Each structure stands twice: as structure tokens, then as C-alpha cells.
Image (cartoon, rainbow, N blue to C red; front, side, top):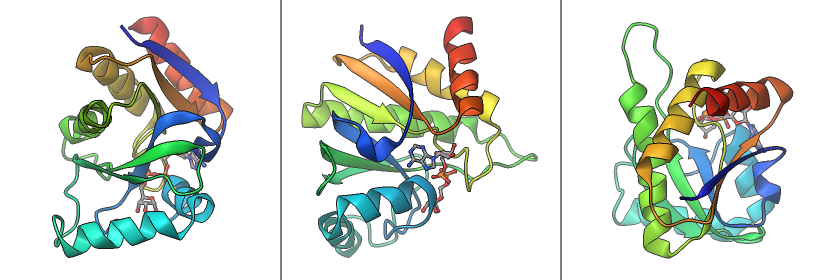
Length: 171
Ligand code: AR6
């Protein structure tokens, strides 16, 4: 069973095998985590994303799925891009958010990653309430299993850290 850990910090500074990007389906960059990863990781990541758009993902990466590229200049080996759902108060999209974590872990296992760092997917620009996003994240990685040494959640601010800490304590 992998250790599930929490750190307060920046996803682009994590020395792990794979960092997960909270991307959008264009795979061509954006703000938040996505912007930071492309900015610090350099152009090699975007070049691979463009190749993915020209081949397997001509219409973009669907919500809930995940795909890996190089991590460029980041202190990681791979970036695993996944597309979270936009929060909706009318429709329950939790299964798609859970799928992001599960599919990212599936890709990480295929790559042979031992350590994976996740941001709190969908809880920024996409508007998912932090407490609920944290519960889904923790539950899904606990259930997903797989042969990893460490699964790390990287939380940008104290409220996010608190939410994940509470979710882990309640699990
Ligand atoms: N390290 C760790 N966490 C961060 C960082 C960072 N460097 N920067 C922000 N966060 P978001 P989303 C936190 O908006 O909601 C982009 O434009 C942030 O406080 O990055 O899935 C994409 O291109 C929040 O809690 O991702 C998409 O269009 C969490 O990470 C869209 O945003 C996720 O915030 C995806 O939105």
C-alpha cells in the first residue's frame, strides 16, 4: 500500500516520478497548475502535447482521461495530463473527477512511476468545492491500489491542505 502524503506547496517543485497536470481538453495550456507546469517545464511539454493533438487526440483529451508527456525541465520524469470536470450544481460529475485520479494512476503504473504528485484537480478555475474535491481525491487514490511508493497531494494554500487533511483523517 502506497503512502498517501500531503504537502503545502507548488506542484512544479516536486521531485517525483510523475506530476499530474490539471489540464483542459485542448492540451495546449492554460492558467493555474497548467500554466505553471508549461512555464517551468519549458517548450518540450507543449511540443509533445501538440503531437498528441495531431495523432491520438485530434478532438482533444476527453474529461476524465489522462495521457503522459515528458516533464521537460521539471524535476520529474513525466507529466500526466488529465482533464477535470467543470463543477456543476445541477449535475453530479463526481464520477468524472474520480476518473481523473484513477486514470492518472493507471498511466503512472504503465510508465513504471513509483511516486506521483497530484494537485487538487478541478478545485481552481473549474470551481469544484474544495472539501468535496478532497474527499473524492483521497477516496479514489485509496481505492485505486497499484504498486506505488508514494502518492502525494500538493496543496497550494492552507484551506486546501486543511480539506485534504480532514478527508484523510475521515477515510
Ligand atoms: N501547485 C499546486 N497547486 C496549484 C498551483 C501550483 N502551482 N497553482 C494552482 N494550484 P486549477 P482546475 C491549485 O485552476 O480547477 C487551467 O486554465 C489551485 O489553487 O489549476 O482543474 C487549465 O488549462 C486549485 O486548488 O485547475 C484548465 O482550463 C487547484 O490547484 C483549468 O484551469 C486546481 O486549480 C482547469 O481548472
